[in-house]
Picture 1 (cartoon, rainbow, N blue to C red):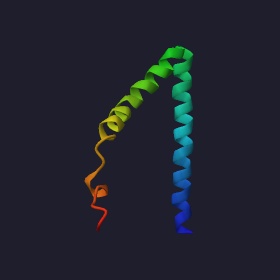
Picture 2 (picture 1 turned 90 degrees about the vertical axis):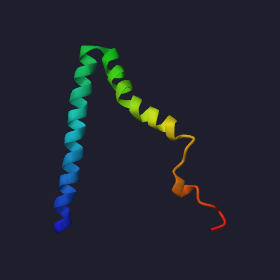
Picture 3 (picture 1 turned 45 degrees about the horizontal axis):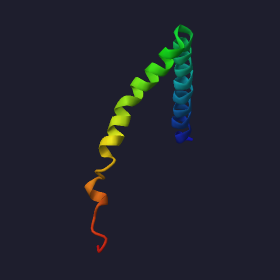
Picture 4 (picture 1 turned 180 degrees about the horizontal axis):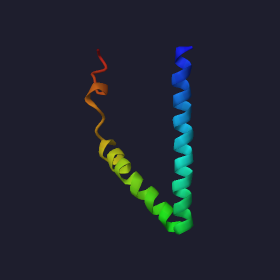
Length: 68
């Protein structure tokens, strides 16, 4: 099955990402409990800014006239 190889690579990528995230955030938690939350807050800041920016301006392609 040719698709099985890609599925295996996808599964391995999620496994490696989970291990890396646990190691990274576990080490942050060992250094200082506040460091974990500080890093997570800083990582989420651009996404929060983007959501708040786009909240009142939906893309033009979804603002089509309903009569169409």
